[in-house]
Length: 181
Image (cartoon, rainbow, N blue to C red; front, top):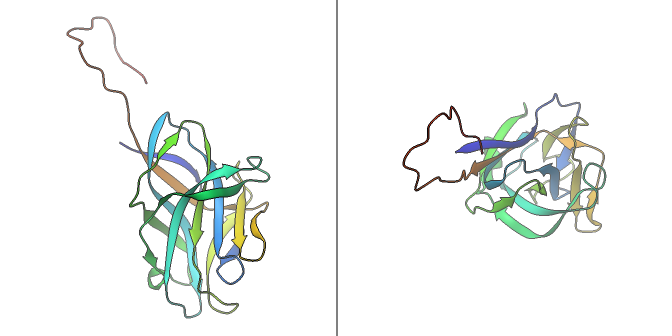
């Protein structure tokens, strides 16, 4: 069953550039489900100028203090299929990335969802909507500095496929109106 794991859908108050110096931009979030495989994510994206190439999303482990110094760490745990930047427009909208690899996220664990595009310059780039309305925090990666955190939150959704437990070997239950997991 598809579930919303976490999101930040408040209005964008500013934008960040993906590419040029920051080739990866990420957002920390918390998995609120006991058993959930990442299935997709959405980011509020637009494009400025004339660019070509693809954007991908990846799930990473979390390092730092959630909400203030979160950064991605290690290798990608799961990666989405590529989205061509040709589908983006100057008017930003939520763009969905579907994961081709699944990863079983641990309950109540913190993660970082990361976008990557290496092809922008200062006049032609992908941009992401941001604000300061989420409990996590944003981060970015540059070849020069590595991972750095910031005080912004990117507009995003993370979805998963929740695996609810199966009940077997029950022949009859009397007097129960609902079962909650």
